[in-house]
Structure formats: structure tokens, C-alpha cells
Length: 317
Image (cartoon, rainbow, N blue to C red; front, side, top):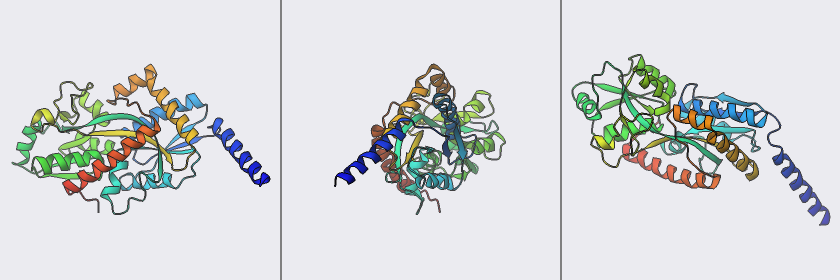
């Protein structure tokens, strides 16, 4: 019995020692979307700063496919030691309600680490679509066929379009899913798809350069980054709001000490003057949260988006 106790104590001490020096080798940060989207932008910013802080490479690995399900499921099965982490968007909370088998359970298979940034979605159009308001777009949709681009099936921009256009406005604007926010924006810039919906950071520079026109944001108040763009609520849909968030996760059973360290270090990175400036420059706002607070928020998001999927009639397969 005494030998067993000593063995358990030795294992516990070894685990604590391993956690105290984390990380002592490269860390893989998997992004289940293609380069160029808001998740990828946030992941690369954080990875660069953590590399500087930790003295170990944080390597961003893009594994796109199935609206993020493929890469997310890979992390769910990874060794829970902190050396494989996930950066994902709100689609993480949406997909289990949208797909018959997303390949992961958002509440069972992961340890929530931190919400790094939150941003409203935005409705924008190619300049050839001569409208400057949401109501004008909805009127045009009754006169001619229109379609909107999103970052993919199950993303919050997709569900924003289904809920806003089809459920609330009764406008038949067809959904065209792309493999990420970047490709969706490129499709609208190139005129292949007249309307787009994505998180502000993904399309912010294109709006500022005039290559697309923003007509509505989904936040409760106007976005500080685009103060001249009216909210959806201001344009005939009072109370309407939804957001895209970018967050970091570890596999379930990752030691709490490692989860707490990663949370604290990412929060530290985002609170620096450079971190705050870079967040603001791409349209994100920071969100104070511990792993426990994030876990509660995630539960509420899963409930919310499952309800939106059901009410909108959105389907993935």
C-alpha cells in the first residue's frame, strides 16, 4: 500500500514538473479553415506572440474541410498534453447541431481555453449592386435573383443569412458556401457572388479600400471599426444581433495547469498595446474570460445556435 502511494506521488510530481516547464518543444496550433479567414488571422497573430513569449515555435497548421469538422476532430483525438491545440470560430458550437455526425462533441471532447476575440458579422455587396441599405437589398431581392457568399455551411455568417434573409425578411437570397471567409470575400470582390456575409475582420480591408460596400452589421451597437455602417436592428429588425468569435481549445483531459497557463499567456498577449492595436485594426474586440467562464459561455452558445439551426431550417447534408 505504501509502495502504491509512493508511486502515485511520484507520478503526480512528474506531471507537475512537466506542466511547470510547458512548453519545452514546438506547439502545433491547428486551424480547421483555410488561410486568409478571420480564424487564421487571429491564430497567426497569437502564434507569433506566443512564440516570442515561450521561446518555442507555435506552428499554425491549416486543415480545412467539412466546415471545420475535419480539423476539429483531429484535435479532439490528439494527446491531451497541450502540444496540440485548436483555434476555431463559432462554427465549433454550430456544427454539432447542423450535421448528423460532426465528428466531435464540443462540450465533452475539449477543454475550453479562452475566447480571444469577438466581432459582429457584416452584410456587404459588390459595388455593381447599387444598394446602400439592408432594406434596399431586400427590395432588390424581390425583383431579381440574388445569392450571398459565406465562409461555409454552418458558420455564423451562413446562419445569419438564413435567419435574416429567409426567416425574418422572407427574401429568397440563395446561399453559396465557400471553403472559408477569405474565399467568400474574394468571390464578392470578383463579382462571382453579389452579396457576402462574414465577420468584420475578414473583409475589413476590402471595405476600407472600397472594393466592396458594407450595408449592415449584426452587433447591438455600431461597430467602432465601421461607425458609419448601420446595424441590422436599426434597419427594421429591432433586437437582432449575432457575433462570430475566435477561441482556443485543448483536447479534453489536458491538465488544468496547462490550460490555465495558455489562457493567461494568450490574455497577456492580447492585453499588450500591440495586441490591442492589432485586434482593433482587424475589427475584433477582446473578451475577458477564464477557462471556467468560457466553458459556461460555450454551453450557452451551443444551445443558442442549435435553436437557430432548427428555426431557420438550415441543413448541412
